[in-house]
Length: 242
Ligand SMILES: NC(=O)c1ccc[n+]([C@@H]2O[C@H](COP(=O)([O-])OP(=O)(O)OC[C@H]3O[C@@H](n4cnc5c(N)ncnc54)[C@H](OP(=O)(O)O)[C@@H]3O)[C@@H](O)[C@H]2O)c1
Image 1 (cartoon, protein in one colour):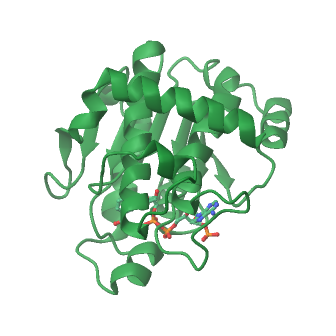
Image 2: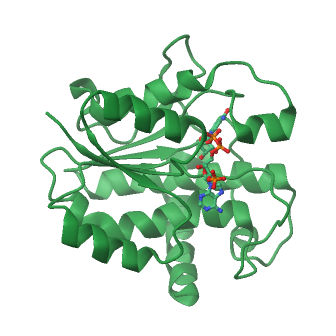
């Protein structure tokens, strides 16, 4: 069945490649660049489309000239976690109209215990830590989202480490695997029947070649108290930003 698929950060890297592959399969792809007004995005999508079957929260940042977003908060936390959280909540009414609604969240092998102070901009941390914390945050939230919405498929995925993309070239100047490896797993998770209905599971594409398998995320992703605290703080943060 042909799906309507929204991919954030699909102007480059694995998001762009995944968009091309999914379009070749005949799916309708909504390419998403750096849109400032997310509320407006919902209004526009709602007027044009009956539903969104798959949201791939792919946009992400590691190195950047500015460590902070315009609102003064850490850029990695904002782009890699808070923005996907907000976009997903805004688009949820459209996503829930799908018969097979899926949310694929880009995590990473880099995961580190989240400092709530860093999330809230009250503590300065290194780029590497901010990236790894943002990726654990999106993983923790993914598990909660899936648990609380049984009709959704919610899969946090490490697409593979050091894939050949702009992000990795800028940070490390080398790569371990092709960007195709990451795009392929996004294509499969978004569409294949065997992944339908899966939640509470973390896909680790480092655990195998060319295709990984479900594996274990950072221990904090299984700690309900930490997850609840993270989401409560995130909700307050989002309310304060709006
Ligand atoms: N490559 C890897 O080895 C690897 C490993 C683990 C996880 N990941 C994750 O996979 C996802 C895709 O990464 P990639 O390697 O394909 O990176 P990439 O080639 O650098 O592409 C990143 C995408 O995100 C967009 N983006 C960056 N900053 C943004 C911002 N402030 N607001 C909105 N969009 C922004 C970029 O837009 P522009 O084109 O405008 O810059 C681009 O479309 C990320 O979430 C990354 O953390 C990648």
